[in-house]
Image 1 (cartoon, helix red, strand yellow):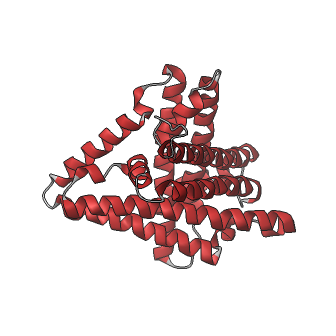
Image 2 (tube, helix red, strand yellow):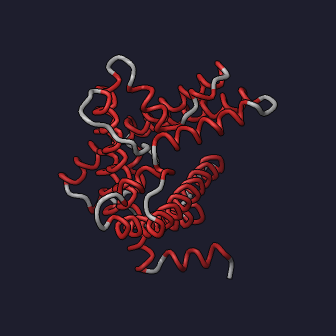
Length: 280
């Protein structure tokens, strides 16, 4: 039996399909918490209470773990993220049916990347559940780590060029998200026949707003990384959390971050719709 056949047999099992839907829903929870952290950062700029937690995967895990009983919740978060990583692996292996080889392999690469990212995120959630909160989810620790890695890349032969490539790639991803929002291509993987008119309206609104919010974040981070490459300044390449906090200091930055937070929350709602209506 080939690996592809074994994967297809596993994917057809009812419990695997249910686990996939749970994973999709948990991804929605992640974006809701991320939206909350971005909104808290914006509030801090306006003097009404911010947050020391990073707007990142580790910050999300630490935020979930913070309340009483949070270690149980972050353990469940880790289970859900593992389910989503599993679903991404299955999607990479089986669900790339585009007629174009280039698009098919691009889809596999994207699904494989999601599997790696959410698999690592799941492992971190389990670590947090076992060991409790740590400084690794703080904004200061996260930004220092990102700036350190940016400085290392800048010191490579041709480092600014490679960092610039990363910045351009993130901006290109932002353009892709805008395209998906405009074309509503996120419906391609949904079973529209099962959707009521109200569900379709909610999915459309949340999907468009959510993809535009993700585009804004990718464009923002890509712009800061590109600036770090051009100016040879690692302090500009601080990742998502650092970019959000630097942007918040600009004129009207807090107001824009509130809008982005709402859009990220909308993507969380869209993921709940996807969990219900995704073809799995």
